[in-house]
Image 1 (spheres, rainbow, N blue to C red):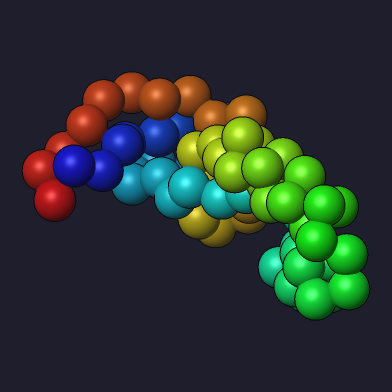
Image 2 (cartoon, rainbow, N blue to C red):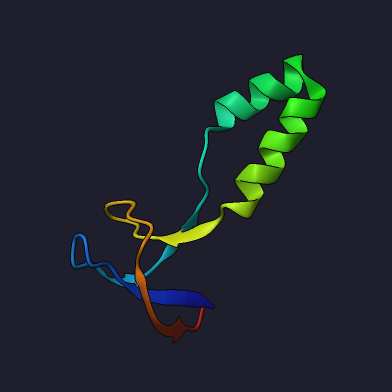
Length: 69
């Protein structure tokens, strides 16, 4: 099921998209060079997963319901 959203920034209405903060490239470098910081960064990225607007990337969207996949 996908979440329906309303974006106050660009006025988009439709299915939302999940996104995480941070950069995959930085995560990869930290894992290759430093194991412990890589683990901490990965955990932080996984806990910042939020619904975002697929058009503008705005993360403070209004959830209005769900629709079937």
